[in-house]
Image (cartoon, rainbow, N blue to C red; front, top):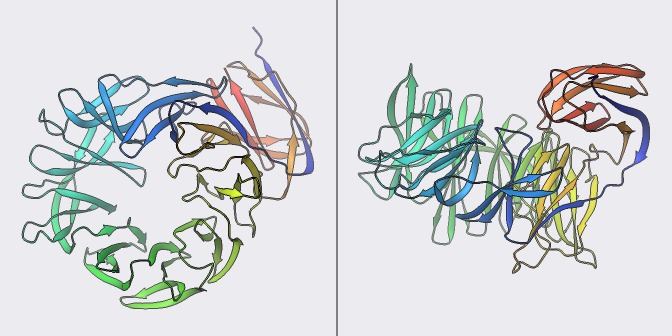
Length: 509
């Protein structure tokens, strides 16, 4: 049988972007809350329902026919908390008959249980994703320990606690793993400790003691120095401390700021600098930490639009800071307001990519509708599309993914009291108000496995064939006119054929 030819025409033209948002699924039985592309099969899109500790349903969404299929985790009575996506499987905490709360994993075919405390009830695992690694804090029958997932069914035990529990994982540098543990000698303090791996053997050191019930940010690494923020609430004040962990593991209090309980501080790295943002009723500014106890003003944001910017994101060489009412872009110490006095911008973004991110603005216009905004390194938002005539809210964690070349996201367009939420999709406009697009004619589509791809291009240009998550499969160059691309090495699935000015979805079956 002769392989099928899939014929595509690339005709270059300059068009004004007119984008639309399309509802692809209406879910009336429970509130959808999170979206994930599965690590074990990147053609699978999983939707999760629930919130808090009660995540009731995990389902596959079939993009081709718009159906939802429940996922069955054999032996799991109740799922507790949201899933965490690993490199080869998903993890979550589940209540299991006879074992209590244990770690559960699923690889698309089988369900796995991990009992860290050897048959004793409930190891009560905490699952942490850090730098694309999976860490677990769980009770091993003696104390709560820290573990690193190594793939398959293998975990490396990092700590060997005998008298005190591990209570928080902070981060790692090279082969040093930093964590907080209970302080036996002073219950009002927690100990910052490090487990150092040398040739597979761990040694342990206590580095510092910090106030109990404080909150800590994730570690930021710059020039082999680690920085993290520690926040303590005392009466009506907030004490923000930033600590540095040197390569020698010496811990230094690098910065100290006492503010009112209504103040806010963020810590981030930008342009090779460690920066902190602080705001209160008097002023808002971004400060560079130049040495122990030494600072320099990086950007003075003043009052008004610079106040209470609760979210910071560095994207494509630009620092963006925003809250529900406004957004600033910041470069080289200069700030520009790019979104002004909105009615409710969502944070964090519904999706962040390497050169753009997407947020939703609720409650716009006289119709009280909502719209999607694409933000990139241009000075103004370049994507503006109405979602619905009823403005409600979107969920704040993992609510959007890039799938089949489009952005798929969850949005709730009904009153909060109603159990309903929907899936929507839209395509990016490549970050320009006017872009060079390709008008495409194709037949047939899908193409059979082993087929050849016939491409007509209006100009010479490079191409890259990618998986739906962006992994490069093959690349080459198109010449003006007819081209033939050999796809015999590609298995069934969804792919993207990318050129400088286009991205075409190809289905191989």
